[in-house]
Image (cartoon, rainbow, N blue to C red; front, side):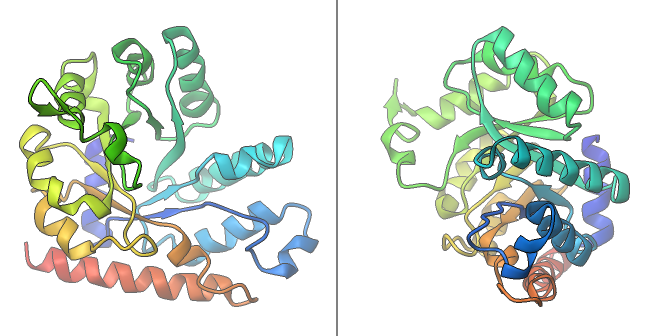
Length: 272
């Protein structure tokens, strides 16, 4: 998917909502555990209920890898279902990969070619040659961890190096990598006060923003400081939407929560 196609979808749906499909078998409705593939059946119901409100889905691959080959098959069925039924939706493999070049090439092929995700999250710690293999795929996007929403982000990401916070070095350096136009960045919603500085460095890039909702991030604050002329934001919510109910009405309740966020976004976009 091209960036322009993503922007067009945001304008059409009046939404920049990304729904995280982080499926935990201990939290999904009990009746689904009786099905052949509970993870996929859960995801399918969530997708069917929310696809008109969301512009993106983001499975966190750890929640699938934890269940071995069956979990991986559930992930494959989920991405195939989205691509076949809602090809306009931007898909994110939240895999947080990052390794030496030839290994990164294989990771990139796994997610961007074999599974055919539109994008994958990547850790920048090992530098250019660990990220550029992901950037080599045409009309695919690499979402670089820049400033995350967890408490441990302060261990390294905000440390001053040569008078500049490390996350700023990451942003500035990544702009010089080959095919850097395919980069997006993860910036946590709980770090809303940093968005102004981040936009000075990457004014036109899309930012994937976790942490709104269950983690306490403010949608209005993120939009106030992080939105650009093309919106430039994908606001992720996972637990707050997909686990709104653990009963047979789980998909309906998920839709209700997704609609609340989408309606907030409609109001914000109307103020542009």
